[in-house]
Image (cartoon, rainbow, N blue to C red; front, side, top):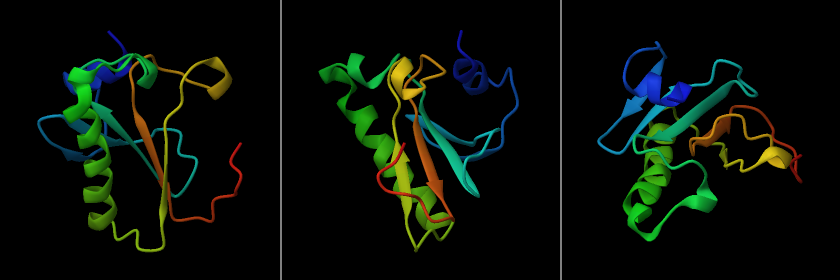
Length: 111
C-alpha cells in the first residue's frame, strides 16, 4: 500500500481539507507554498499516463475538487495545479495526485 492508500484508510493521520466519494484532499507535509494541498483519488491509478477511459469520472472529479477547495480557501488571486509523472518530474508516490499550490507568486516557466 502507498502512503496515500494508508491515509485514505485512516491508518496514517493527515490534515483533511475536503473529501468526497472519489477523492480526498490533504495538506502536504512538506509544503512548497503557503497553501499546498494534494488531491488524491480514492481509486489507485499509479500515474496519469496509466489512467484508462473508465477513470474519466474520477479524473474529472479531481479538477472539480480543486475548484471546491479553492473557493473554500478563497484563493481568488490564483492557484496552480501540478501532476508529476516519472523520475524526471520528481514523482515520489506511485499513486496519481494533483498538487494545488497557492498564496505566493509562482514563477513561469515552472521548474
